[in-house]
Image (cartoon, rainbow, N blue to C red):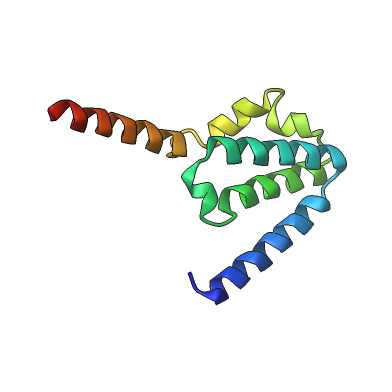
Length: 110
């Protein structure tokens, strides 16, 4: 990765954080919990820029602008909301499970 790409990535992230800070407090709180949840379960695409997080942020900005409560936007089960967003995405857990299965298969053949 070039230095220029790293600098651009940091600029994008800082702009993203400023957008989050401009949300109402309840939206900020739920957004941060979603972010933590997604970082823990690790959809691979999440680490390829701010795409998914930016989409969630835009969705939240629209909800806040229309005066909706954050749980009207996400539903009461925020984890389920996240799971639906990443439904078919590969996660690091998927990669780990595949590697374990491959290792066992390889070891059993020996």
